[in-house]
Figure (cartoon, rainbow, N blue to C red):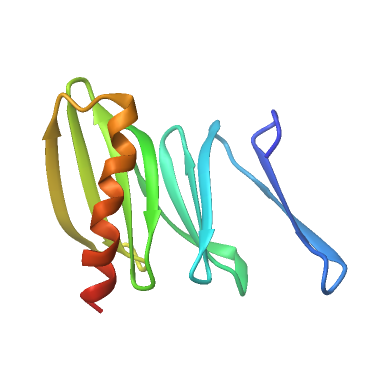
Length: 123
């Protein structure tokens, strides 16, 4: 990531790279389970690692605080004032589940990782 809203992905095995430009500020990204999830200020972009030219994307309502990944699902935890929302999606952007947490503190977001085994069991 750089300050110009650009992501540079380097494949050292094949000795090539790809640049992806975003119109909004890059907030966070996670690579796992053959997907790259990139969160900007206003959108979530989901790339399959074999096809970085055509992402799935959708608009975000609030600022994302945490991204969790599992083999079939991923979760975004966003922050809407005092209400934290845990949104679970299939990688093809099908929304499946939402949890709401009231008054979560910044250091409590790591506690949400308890849902990883739950997500992985429901494949």
